[in-house]
Image 1: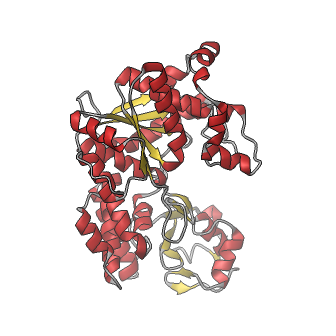
Image 2: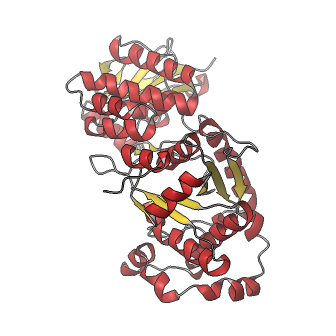
Image 3: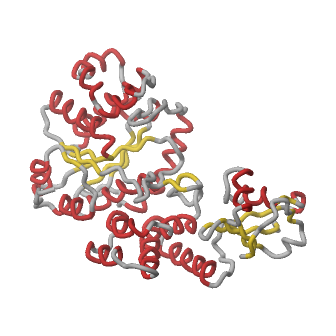
Length: 415
């Protein structure tokens, strides 16, 4: 990347590792020097919370606002009814309007922690594309918008090609998605002066379509900027763990488990993640990332604290660190550990069931294998008997259940 930007935002994107590609570096850089650039990222409402996979582009919007521009978070109340086929091997399940509205309400909670919303020139806007998509007349839309799209070109985009190359069905419903996303950009430009769309590099084709459409219909110059699709150094998709998605809403994942996810970052990823997911100065990120041996663990704790403070608040980060130190360094039981409460009626209960219900294994088979391979512990003592039953006497006091070195839960009798 040899381009030397004049605008603070693009310089930050390059320096911290956010930038994969841009449709016109010079044009966007000049626009950002000239004034406030309203910028959007779209989020389809497929779940009640955003997850760590979304955090990269939420941080991009945060930096955008910090450098004097206007973020627009576009909720896909309309597009969620279709589903983005980009780089998916199957069609998304279709959701009803009530479920979509419920999901949007849950997702909104996260944005308020990272962005400042309001009526000022750089205050963020929360919009919903159902505002213009729900009322579209199909025939008018085909005539006015559809005529600008070449099917040959749409078939050439990597997101569509990868699906067709595997001979997997791509429904006409999904094929329409990129037209709707292009139309979003057009409408945001027309209604709100939006000049830039950002997204992961899998969105490149959709973004370029929106730029072309806006140029053809309104004769306006607008821009696209993408971030790299992140994988961890061991090749896993960012944001996935053994237990599933790492959610950003605390009612779907406790702040302690969120903190623990970052604390367990692979050594090789620490410096890169500090640049992307915290606001620490770049040279400090480089210094922490270069630590070796046991010192890198302190860098991981710093990473976990910084990211958790942004998402859940400073107090939640402090409590999570205190719990972790209690559990790992002193072998005690921390207050914030994920907790399984059992009633008297459920006792006695097999240890395999307890491991399963505490979320430390996905199946009975996995729980038994954990015990057989001596990866499970009860109050720090190795568990060797998969047939063990826990009764009221065994649970007279809360017990700590561990899977491996890093995953723990508290098991107790319900009061």
